[in-house]
Length: 300
Ligand SMILES: *Cc1c(COP(=O)(O)O)cnc(C)c1O
Image 1: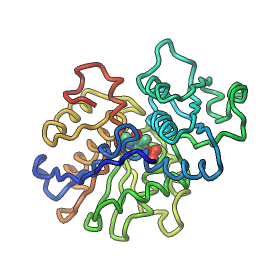
Image 2: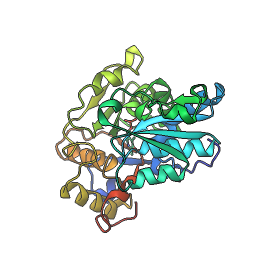
Image 3: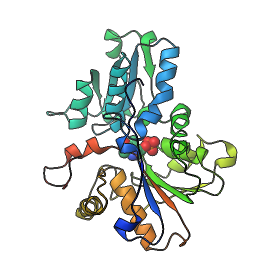
Image 4: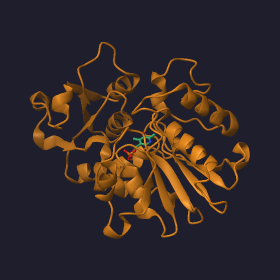
């Protein structure tokens, strides 16, 4: 993408949080004003392929709170492409902040009943306005080899060889697959699924990995806070105190849960004292706009 990428530093947080070994945060949330965090990496090679094939419209799938939807809309606009969002569920009376933002970036939204959404078919009304040959389809959530290939570029942004563990939030697992592919043999990658009981993730992530990498990641299943985009007072309170201590804002759908998990695992002695942990801040702060005003002490 030709809009400027901003620096995304590594920020140490051990001292601020009184942790027993070095823990740093990779601030991908600072990477780009709109396509923040991991989404830029996941979209990169899909966009390149769309251009190579001469496509003029990006189509993808997502729910009302999908960061992937708004990132695709913004990326398409920057590239001079049109975009089409196939959205799960009936059109609501008032659109979510995420969908309003996507529409502002020029995305045409088509709402599809949940049952048909599951089949990931393009509704025929789309073809009233677009030629099928112009459309490039990006899988839901950017899941796929090209998405993981982009995410392989995250760890090489910095000198990351000294970390023993790398931890991040998991939706489709595409980003995690990229981290696993890029990791060195002594590094362990820990994923925090934010969906409840999404046990198919294990094989979905493995499907994106070369065979020698298939079993070298660890999914911690107990930090979904009752499911996707659900939250509790405990999570919100954690996000506020994490911000107070470190100055780092998190989102309640992904990074808040992942960082909560990291602190909990540290407290439960999941890591040996000679560990060095890198937390990947995958962005997603725009999602906080759906929380009531005053819930968080920081601006998302
Ligand atoms: C989309 C998203 C994820 C999940 O990425 P996957 O590659 O689908 O696992 C994690 N964190 C944030 C902030 C996201 O927006």
